[in-house]
Length: 425
Ligand code: PLP
Image 1 (spheres, protein in one colour):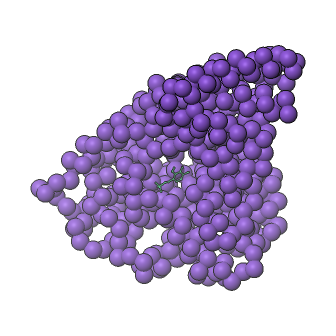
Image 2 (cartoon, protein in one colour; image 1 turned 60 degrees about the horizontal axis):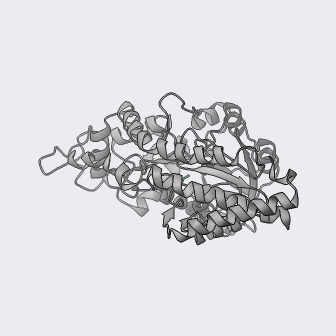
Image 3 (cartoon, protein in one colour; image 1 turned 120 degrees about the horizontal axis):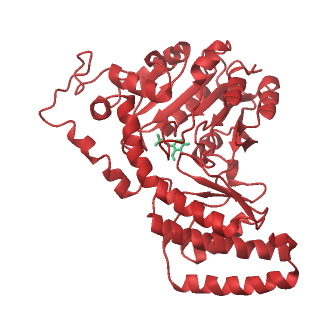
């Protein structure tokens, strides 16, 4: 029965039982963490043999004869550009290989636009107002970058097909101060949603009031499936933008952080030839070149897209039981109670939970008091402010499946108690 249909007496009686169970859970002195969106050590072991691909007797030349031990090659060795292009679903001439992390590239892109402008447009620092659209819930580190540059952020609600395109068209096509939008188009962080073909096509067909409006297309989870047989697909935004006559409108980002090693992977940007040329003019001031030995290591290990896909299934085998353990508890314990909804992703790193309005902070705090750490409530929104205080991001990747089940049991207990308190307020 839905909690809101229960009488006050029924709710108080139920709360008594739940409080008792909560006290029991507290007395166990647990220490569980559902907040870390990173692979477990066991998962990292899956890639350890990559470290054997390059050693002191390796041929250190890339396909085109470049000695990867030395300076040079601003945009990456050809085979690395091809691999990252294949991962993103584009072609190598669109790609620049950077260093070890895509977040760094995103920061640089905003920074370049801010200090020097894009393709000859006025630097954003010289404008009175710069705004970014932020599909919510979203990735806190995106919001941190735009906040850092004093860019005003506007929330755009998400649905299973992607962000609200009516709202985006209205803002982008009419307001010249709207210069960008943060997108995680596939297996989004935190909901695990993938933008539909219609959404991607509507993005490509935008008619921005600002000439230097850019879509920041963070394809962080493009190949991060949880299942072999149930996989989301996404259109290639770069060719869609070309077809729609907007070739320069998108910067796409990806990395092998959660393919090989987070912090020691290979990161890339993809964009139009004009944007790539514009970026390289600045990049050559910033660096002589990135880590080509790491590029070589990755290409020699994975060989090609098929190799990467096969490797991702090894990750999926480790991740799937953790997601399934969590979703099982949510389903068994919360279905039909009217106190929460959650996403059931086919990929990515997170499950998104929406509690009753005004409950998220209290649930996170109550979990913490029982030894279960969750991501701070509000973190999935710009400025850390969830207007409904409802969204909670669950990260199942780091603990074991057994720990996730235990942590989820405590989570649902806290959801129930806090919801009853809210209804009785
Ligand atoms: N983009 C999204 C959406 C993420 O969730 C993450 C990590 O959690 C990153 C980027 C970080 O990527 P990188 O390690 O390449 O900086």
